[in-house]
Amino acid sequence: MGTYNEEAAIGKVLSDIEDVTDGKAEVVCVDGSSDRTPEIAREHGATVVTQRPQGYGVAVRAAILEPDRPIVVTTDCDDTYPMEQLPEFLELINDGYDVVSGDRLYHGADAMPAFNRFGNHAFAAIASVLMGTRVHDTTTGMRAYRRDVVESIEWTENTGLSAELLVRPLMRGYDVREHPIEYRERAGETKLDPIQGGAAIAKSIVKVCLEERFR
Image 1 (cartoon, rainbow, N blue to C red):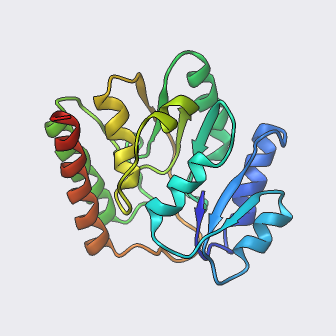
Image 2: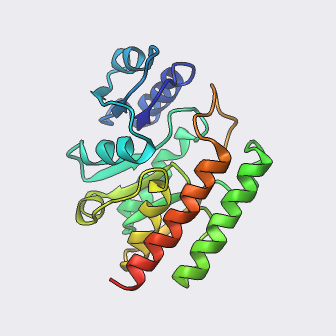
């Protein structure tokens, strides 16, 4: 997880992870917070890597490369993602998938603001056209990866890293599965401006798809 001022939710998220994994998960938070987020994370046994705030992608990229485990899972720290479904993701990886990507839109994502929901459908449509492969949710924060996948690709995007983490493996022939998840209303305040952030994500999707198409 990349964490930034999520003291309202981080404790619950980490407790949920501990419950569903029987405390066997290694949790890494790459943190640039000015609130109690890192203290709470350490209290729950997480490894906290302190980093000057540089954006979503910089933090998450550092987080996914930090642990030395055969399976790496990403999630957001705002309690929007169902940690109780983590075992389903791990089972699918063990069944042979390289990447398992949580599809928030499958069940409608009613807890998501309408503008964000529209934007996510638009991102998926753009990516599907450019890749020639139908995808449903390009910017989900909940995914599981085989370690060799995250190590074999050079990740370049910042705001658009969540889309890049799906697009590049798909276009390189990895076995990717989108898996329906329930999406909840976030705890705490959102940090992403929907207009500027949305434009940056759309630009990243186009850039990454074209780079992969012509690599």
